[in-house]
Amino acid sequence: MSTIKTLAVLCTAITVLCANSYAQEKAPQKVVDLANSELAALGTDPIIVAAVKAENAKGKTLDQIKAMDAEWMSIPGYSDFMKSLMDSECGKHLKALIDSNDYYAEIFVMDNLGANVAMADKTSDYWQGDEAKFTESYKDGKGAIHISDVKFDDSSQAYLVQVSVPVKDGDTVIGAITIGIDIDKVE
Image 1: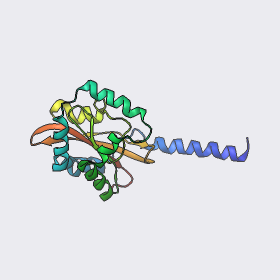
Image 2: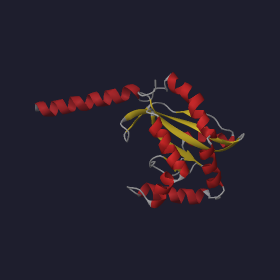
Image 3: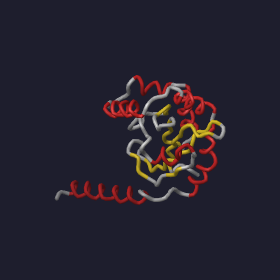
Image 4: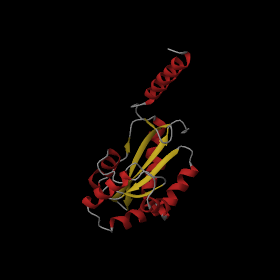
């Protein structure tokens, strides 16, 4: 094997080992503390609550959402609908939140069925309703904070923990919000 090929194999092996060093670890305590304070408060943010209430009022069915999800995943770039979720008042608010915090890598908001309401950037799918980020934070309308294990995120090239919190209108859980936290940037 040539020296270049040997170096390439070694670099790949080191990358895999480093990626696995964080992978599947529990979230650091500093992220747990952040989840229970600053991030939990986002679930009562008036702009986010208003957007979720408006989306819930549309009365979409799960079948409609799943059809939109299939279409969403078939689009390699951005559709007008995706752009509308980023360009909405709530989407712009989420983008401003990301821009104001180095450790925020992603933010998106979901309705009462787990469909995207707003996002700072495109998510891989439209319907989150079958994923722990929604099911654990919405908790059948009861609400709870859900903190994922550490995972390497290809799009941001960083180790992230997804923190999901319920969106509440008063005491009523109406949706959820997920915030991707870059664990290397939290102090």
